[in-house]
Length: 120
Image (cartoon, rainbow, N blue to C red; front, side, top):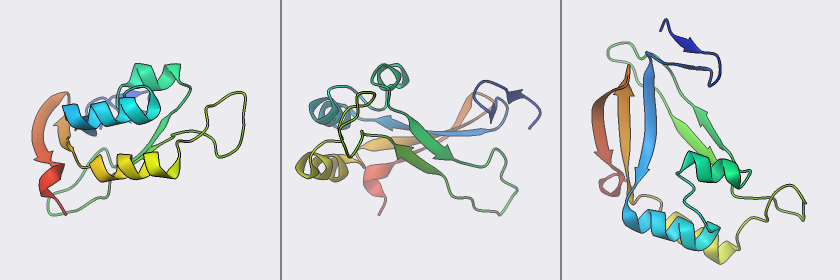
């Protein structure tokens, strides 16, 4: 935990967790949102963000919680951001949300993969 990246406020040598969507989930996000929400550049072009909570270090025999929050739009008309998709479209995203792999890396080296379809 020595290499703090001042642009991302993440540790370059710490634990990184990210979601790698499968083709079906990418297609659903493109259908619902008009772009792949898992692609950082496409999200930035749409002026939507992602929030993460994480721990850069986990001691042996400890557990930590990691969360991802995707901004999908505004609830009311706003000239700076698109409207959130309809409830039907959001339900479709939720239905397919686990069609992905959770990837864990440390110091830019992949250490584990978890197929989220298999989790409950």
